[in-house]
Image 1 (cartoon, rainbow, N blue to C red):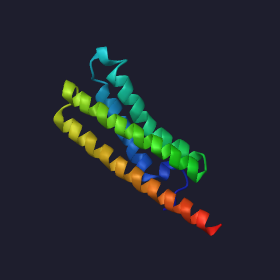
Image 2 (cartoon, rainbow, N blue to C red):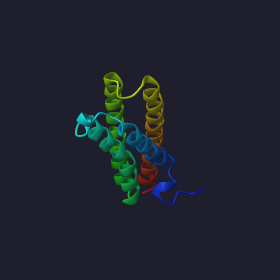
Image 3 (cartoon, rainbow, N blue to C red):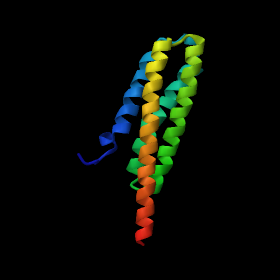
Image 4 (spheres, helix red, strand yellow):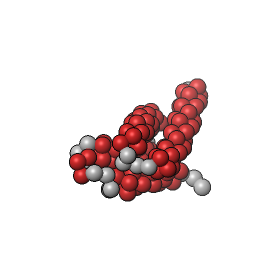
Length: 128
């Protein structure tokens, strides 16, 4: 299958589903956290698939790489926030592990995509 849009990227699909999962989990967080960890975690979660989509939509390898770096950073931010949620008792150890595994997979996929794009950019530069 060829990649025509960001929706065809497996990393975007996984990031999108992880974002949906974060929204489901945070829906039961304490109301006192609405503008705290709930908001922060949701924003970081939305940032990952959004930046992947935006980067691909810019049709430039350099811009795509930049957006993937931002997505990677947001994914790391989300990991830290989930640790806090576990420590505060907002998510169980099992939920934390499940979400953490998803985030680790997204991190690996994002890294692989960045490396592939860097190789492509280098090859394109070498051809000139």
